[in-house]
Image (cartoon, one colour):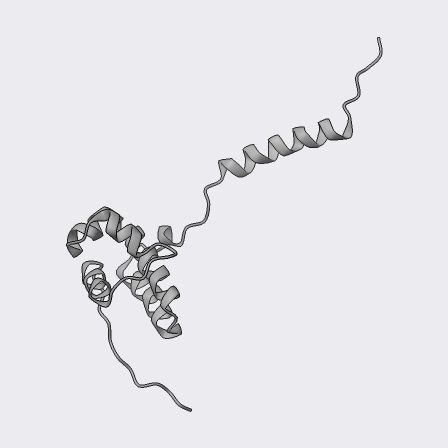
Length: 118
């Protein structure tokens, strides 16, 4: 009997399927999973505010809200859950009043510091 030797393509397909299973078994990294204290949430927001980029601030709001649960944050802020998802999406642009409501609902506050011009 002649042994059947799989072709290179067959071997690669088998490896790809195995790798897909391995990669698929691992949970994707999500910073929200690590924001489990008020201090950690405040640090994440403070870093985004320090950077001053509106997209980073929106991203931080999204991450902190997910760490607390979007539904709970939406209810506490008096917003619809769908509206919250939309406002904090990659293409979202939340109004300032929404940002203030979210910050309060997430147990955070804004503060102002002078810019260090040194």
